[in-house]
Image (cartoon, rainbow, N blue to C red):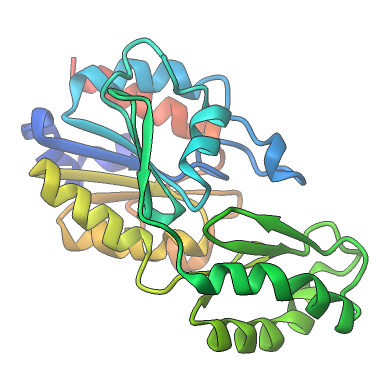
Length: 266
């Protein structure tokens, strides 16, 4: 927290907290990374920290590549006391869940998603993808994980070009992450989502925290909005660290930082 206190972005947030936007990634940021994404849950210290912070700032939002409902469930956000204004933007901003209504709103996914869903299993079989490679169906996108493979880097190298070709043929794009390649609609990213939410909420101070390559657009957007950024990880991704005002090693330490921010706001 002390590293942030002197940054221009945080000074703006502290000056007008009622117009501040605090936006946070979920996996690897609020939740520790686990082998099975379905088992990911927010660190126990996160919810209490958010409940302390939310009444003291204009907007708290979760910005994730997951479906919004999954992040809400895995974070324990639905019905949480003090988080009645929480916003969860899922699928990089293509979906939105508002705690005030408890509903998800979204446009239908493009047809390329269904085409990839149909073709991807056969493609992995034809490529003899290593054991431990698996598909996560996120409804509006599909992700191929290699974390469970004996050689996750080698598996990624095998899949990069074929998945890029599949994405191009179906009108999607490939988003790389930590031992994952995600095929999703183009023109949707966390940077655009963060800028859109900042405009909607007329935010004057912005803080964004994330841990992986999918957060890069949001880091750039936060910096462009005059805000501050926090990278989570041990070690942190160097691409994010280069744009970060401070780094914390894990979701537990991020929760401490958020609690410290709440304390600084009184």
